Length: 215
Image 1 (spheres, rainbow, N blue to C red):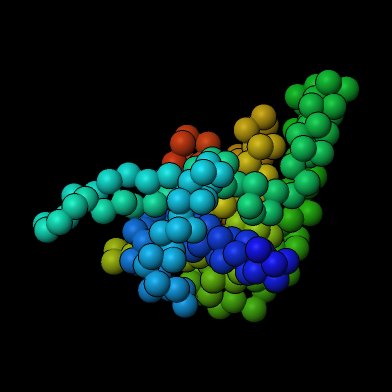
Image 2: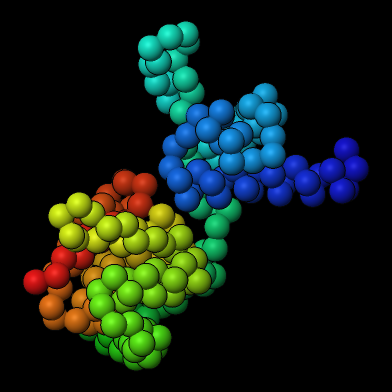
């Protein structure tokens, strides 16, 4: 395989992994509809990604024919996405806790949250309603590597969805990071909304989801 072909293959596989991150589990035909490839070609890439332990499948019964293979990402897929210099962050958290204790670590996290609040509030300053604020917030989070989007619900509430967490390893060793994230969203969206985390990556789910409701 030439160098050019190898780059093309890598790019295609990265696109497949990104599509599964953005849209969730899919079969090969659905994936092919989003790519300039045939179903056969997509399956070849899927099986190679499976060998790398980046994806896996579950069989889903269909009314006719064989069960379909529904492909989804494994935990190993996180290495294909931004990780925010994760090992350095984890090491720093351990060092701060060892040197200053949980209280010192909490103060540093609170200082960081305060900085984020100021930055986010400046970027949301032109938003006139909750929907606009959430759309702007999702763009900020998307730019930070969270693969974020907003979905409006039939009952008038909104879901703020984050399909990737670039600091997941750090959050796993320091619960204050996730607590501060929830408090950050509450502060920048205002006290006229309630925010509830309804799906959580660290609980084994495939994404973090916040339900936001106007009071």
